[in-house]
Image: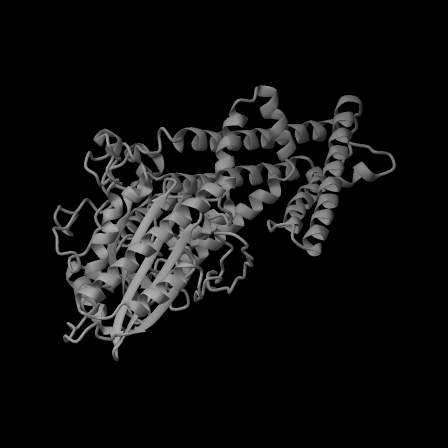
Length: 592
């Protein structure tokens, strides 16, 4: 399946576990600045199995399909990672955002080239036909307006229903209008002649039109149809061949990786150096951006009371975490079986569990992005200070991550403990990244189905989609021009550093989980929660502190007690008799 995780994401920094480290920082020489991630290797034979490598995960592949399929998603990725180079990237949980960016830039360049050609043919048609195509543009614009009126939101209100009804009417009126024009032009070409022509003669009483103008109109329309068909053919080939499950793991053969310009190479190298760091540079309004939706976050506080007459041993934060780590790590090892060969064949995703420490540091105050303290020495200094200080802006967490369904369902649990004033405070903050949008998977299936059409089917599809090509070309070129002007004139290259505005992985997520995925989510969280609670309990008991209050409160939480922030931007519910409401606070949106 895959090899061990790359250095930075999933490595365990030094302090907590007393045993030897799995993947120490700096043990290997660094790769070239923009070397693509290595191809996956076969799974190790030991009890611990390496997780799916981000560069070749199914989530990365589907997001690459998404930037070819979804223009809005592609523009958001380019704006965040390519235009705003002053922003730190959000953690790329389970994906390689550098590879997604490469495909986004490549898809945009291809789309811009086709849009320029199609728009050029429309403008040429306006000239050679004496303005005849002007009347056709009204229908093309109507189709684009109909799509805008309809929107992309769910049908969950009367306003949404009214918008769909109006969009349906505008779309079909535009289609009938264009069919009428096509029939008139064909009739003029076949049966009529004349020398005088203008764009308004179609609606004059005599319907006089020049045969030459009508023939030129058909030639121009034929060229536009051909461009529309070829553009769709290129999309189908990229999605069904280059991004197929069989070819995607071969990173070195990816055209998006090898055909990059100088700016993309530079930004991609920086992105790959930052996206999986244990030091998380965050934006203050949404510190956990990149890790998904908060889910059943809880905290508790207990009084530290001696268990017996003997004086208890003082507890610090690191000592408590040291008790948690081995219990959580043991989840990677299959339970004993009668047949040892059966244990080696277990593919439970808990075998791929990753556990490390991370430090959250606000991006405000960093002068430039290059000045971030990503070096091993700087990180270790922040880690050692944040572990015991219990600060607000700089926070230390034990991070536990399970990537299920080939990194499509990612559960990340942040654990923080702190002792202060004779009290023990524990925080348990699970975050869930939901699967990549189903529309991207369907786009791949649709591309394969479209390639299976015969010649007549391809022509028919292109003819149907040609009327809207003018509006789509204008929108594509307008988006490209806006991004380029922002890049050239925005001054982002020398701007002060900022935290991430959006996360690529979160932009491409769906809101729904399948029943199987809900079951896996519940299992991961309950298992990790029990092991974390066991570690805290062990630390208290071995140090001579009473555990009865902790046991009572942790049972209350485990049985569905009070959670903090559990419904924040969340539409997930596990268990019976759930009432789910989805609210949006706006913190996950993009900055203007």
